[in-house]
Image 1 (cartoon, protein in one colour):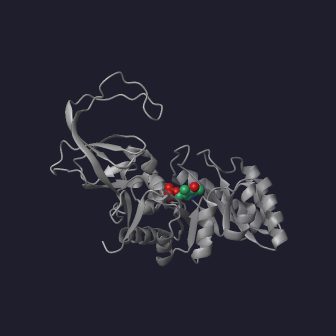
Image 2 (cartoon, protein in one colour):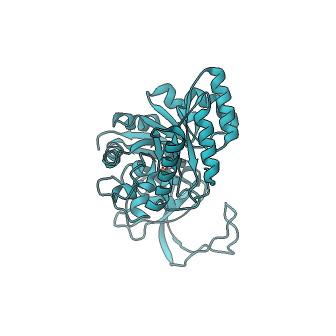
Image 3 (cartoon, rainbow, N blue to C red):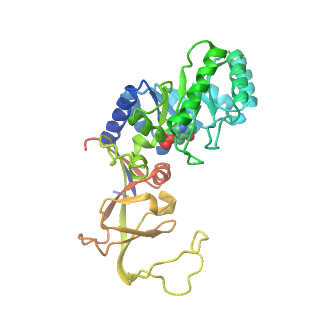
Length: 362
Ligand SMILES: *Cc1c(COP(=O)(O)O)cnc(C)c1O
């Protein structure tokens, strides 16, 4: 056995896919399974297909290419594309999110040369200030252009909230999206849009509360299935049917010593250019683990399964924990278990130093 390890609990992830799907099915909402948070892991992506979700989404083309080549899935590109990606988009992506006419024109030209039809979803910025049309007239004009284009199909419109501006999805802002969809259907397409995509995991509370505008028929869900942590821990939505024990990291203890909690000497600059401050709690029993920022991003994105452990800090390759309160008498070589928040999942799943283990039965 070598450590650290990233453990995927396939049964619990499968359970979460099925529960979120059930929740959304009741509201006639289709889900795109977003697996960019686990580096587009094929085993995890396939679980979505097994549960009847046939659309897989990622921000990264190399992951979408993998889905196209290895799985029988419809692919959705989440990050609006670079001009330099358009050839590959036509090869590996069925539907792309878009917000620039210049890109759409270039894509249409390439699609026409290859005699392909490519579906696009136009993104609307409802205030979060990442991608999307901010101006309604601009959106409508481009929607009309796409509708009339030779080789693009206007599949629908969508929005993204909560990622940059931390704007909360609400009935009100999603109603704006749904009204824009109505306008486009009435004035341009003369028939219902296939996709009206109301956001990501953070839109799930509206589904749970039965408060999502009726026209919203699509969500792109990653974290809410893969970890199911954020809604519960940050939004106050404990979703009892979802398992929070989906992914965990196992790491090995490499040193245990009694040391003061406050560094000795003049506190200057740490390995990442910050000047930290420390609480003086006297002498503590501390353990050092072979896991660091390079593996997980930041130590505050780890959740120890032993609740008596306090995470103290980390450097690139070391995690420092306080085990003074622990009932268990930890020894060198012991293996500790942590659940993860998004950043730790993102970093660890793409890390070649971390062995991935797929746990099937429990
Ligand atoms: C990452 C991403 C998602 C999925 O977000 P989760 O919070 O993991 O559900 C959805 N849409 C877009 C555009 C994204 O970039």
